[in-house]
Amino acid sequence: MPDDLSDFLDNLAIRQEEEFLFLGTPNQWKNRHVYGGHVISQAMEAAQRTVPAGFHIHSMHAYFLRPGNADNDIRYEVDPIRDGRSFLTRRVVAIQKGEALFISSISFHIGEEGISHQINMADVPAPESLESDHDYYSRVSQKLNRPYPKKNFMPFNQRYVDRVDVERPEPKPAVGGMWLKFEADLPDDPALHSRMLAYISDSHLMGSALRPHAMHFRDPHIKMMTSLDHSFFVHDPSARADEWFYYQMEGTWSGQGRVLGRGSMFNRTGKLIATTTQEGLVRLTEKAKLEMVKKGNP
Image (cartoon, rainbow, N blue to C red; front, side, top):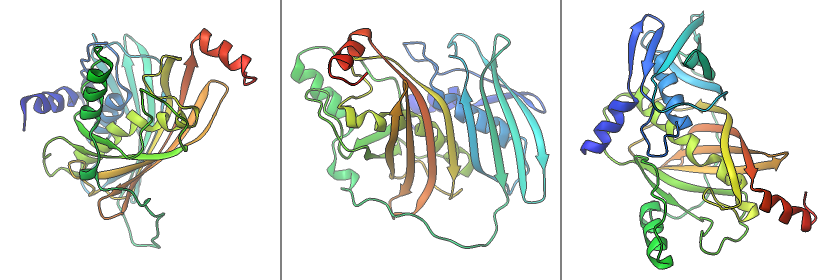
């Protein structure tokens, strides 16, 4: 595995201080922003390390309460709310400087036989036929003859099916998606793969609600964009993050300064492996707000 990816996994790992107390290092991005998926993954690991073998996460519900500080470790306090024969529940609070940044409820299930069905994956081009994010942004930067802001380190190969063009943004359907996979082979650890899927699930979901407005996450009209709450449902605990999976996303609603997105992750064969929902805050610049009023869309 390349050194930068090994460093990424080392930085994401948590260390145990007591039975239900863990410490994690924030992601070290140049902008000093603590990425929500990083905290989600570390909270998931804290919960996973307090349950016996055989139980797998089936759902996580979380709220982002405060922005994190990249200069201080994050303390994860686990509350073992319930231990049942089929289900276990953990409450995890992420704390910095005595204040809660993030709170989550995580449920584990032993797994059992029952009815089975799923929604279908959209008919989309194969990832090999699509341009990667890295190539796209490099090409745009050269074409515009200006340095384009470097993307914070995300260890995934990412390929949009129908992206909003940053050069000529036009309204797109609220339903879109992208192919993703971790940049290198990961160990055969199902818990780690679940955490990696949850990690990347926080990266693009809010953007689906920007598509109908011809906007993207680097849009100059956006003053602030941040996650408020996040849910992650695991349908296949054996799913791998280092093999291509399609993240189908739908921006179901926007209003009152907030957006709502819903996502479905499918493996290469079309099997539904996870479902996500996320609400986020999107604040516009004052200039953008004035333009909206002039267009009759306050």
